[in-house]
Amino acid sequence: MIRANGGEFLDVRLDAIEAALTSAESDRIRVEGALERLDPERATAELKSALRANPTRPGEPEDPTITTLRRRHEAVNGLMDRRDELERRVDATVADLEALAAQSFDLGVTNRADATIEDELARLHQDLTALEQAHDEVRDL
Image 1: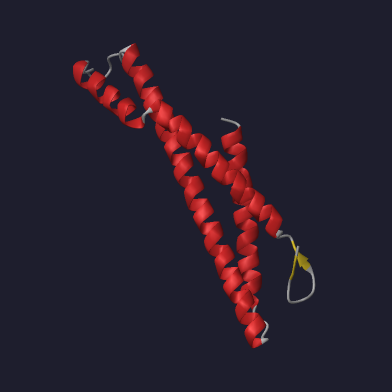
Image 2: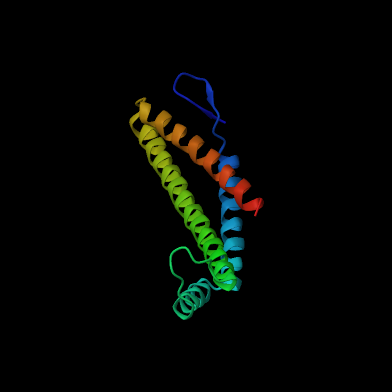
């Protein structure tokens, strides 16, 4: 736990953040492995090819093959979105940790109290919560 200026402990534990970052990276690697096997470029190319070969008019039922290819394409793109969100969340958390470290060093050098440390800790708590939620979503895939 980290002690705030007023002496109370904030609900930010660096070990929990480290564990969440490790889990997020593990999740990203799992999703990336799944994407390699699913081959997003092939999924897109096959859908486009099927759509060109079997054009449908408004009101006509869609060819079952196109429906299946479309569902696969949407699922693969959903995984790509999850991977990208994990990367953004990890990058934001690392940036917040670096900002906290810099401000902590500044406080140690200047001996001044600053509310920005509490702001950084609040951001880290939000990052930790978001990483844990992302992990839960990926775990449920």
